[in-house]
Image 1 (cartoon, rainbow, N blue to C red):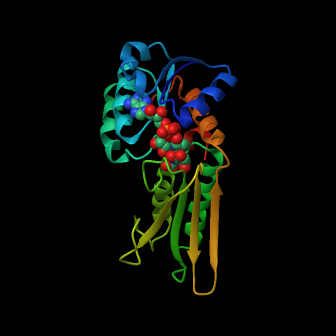
Image 2: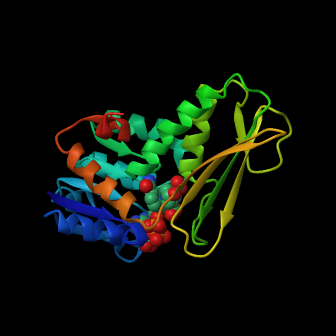
Image 3: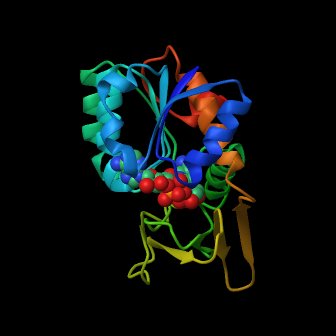
Amino acid sequence: MKIALIGYGKMGKTIEQIALDRGHELVLTIDITNQHDLTVENLRKADVAIEFTIPTSATANYGLCFEAGIPVVSGTTGWLDRKTEVLDEMNKHNGTFFYASNFSLGVNLFFALNKKLAALMANRPEYDISMEEVHHTQKLDAPSGTAITLAEELFENHPGKKSWTLDKPTSPEQMQITAIREGQVPGIHRIKYESEVDHILIEHSAKSRQGFALGAVLAAEFSFGKKGMLTMNDLLNL
Ligand SMILES: NC(=O)C1=CN([C@@H]2O[C@H](COP(=O)(O)OP(=O)(O)OC[C@H]3O[C@@H](n4cnc5c(N)ncnc54)[C@H](O)[C@@H]3O)[C@@H](O)[C@H]2O)C=CC1
Ligand SMILES: O=C(O)C1=N[C@H](C(=O)O)C[C@H](O)C1
């Protein structure tokens, strides 16, 4: 496939390597320094775009891809307050948008485990729940997109928690998420159920960015020829 890569940072570079290994061609590579080359005309040279940039740039980039009529796969986090506008724009152009807060297979299995554990603990009020995420110091958003997905899916399966906070909870229905920024950590997510007598802890820890990048390239292959909003549940049949 001919791929337009939007964002050539840590993820963009890892995606490039995996895309080339899988026999794809990069027909357009855009970063902050050559942003002016991100045009509808140039995007039309690609079969699909993969977008990993920053929260403030992502939604405008999606708009250009919809206008160009190519599917866009994105993992940029921190923009979801504008999701309705993005979906309206996608529908206006009959476009294709594949979004995941986390593209790794392991994290998507961890999402399923989180939902099952939350359902199992739904009638166990003696356990309080908290989350922790650890990422590299360059990360712009907190909590991570993955932590927000974990929290929202936990709330759907556990009546005791209804919202998250980065601060100290002010009611039992609030769940604290602690966001730690240190070194070059690719991404760790922990969910802890704690009672007076014990605790249960589940954790996913990424060893590198390879798992995220492979998932994004698989999502690009999956998106080709499809329409509408796509997620990892569609790709992985979860
Ligand atoms: N969904 C997932 O599986 C994953 C998501 N992410 C998310 O992806 C995003 C990027 O992560 P990294 O690559 O680690 O960050 P990074 O900071 O290494 O790379 C971002 C790149 O985007 C460029 N950029 C900024 N504005 C741009 C614009 N308007 N057009 C083109 N390029 C632009 C920057 O110059 C930079 O090179 C973040 O939001 C991060 O949270 C990161 C890893 C996995
Ligand atoms: O910024 C990162 O690095 C990551 N961002 C994503 C997130 O916010 O959840 C996914 C992964 O944890 C790495």
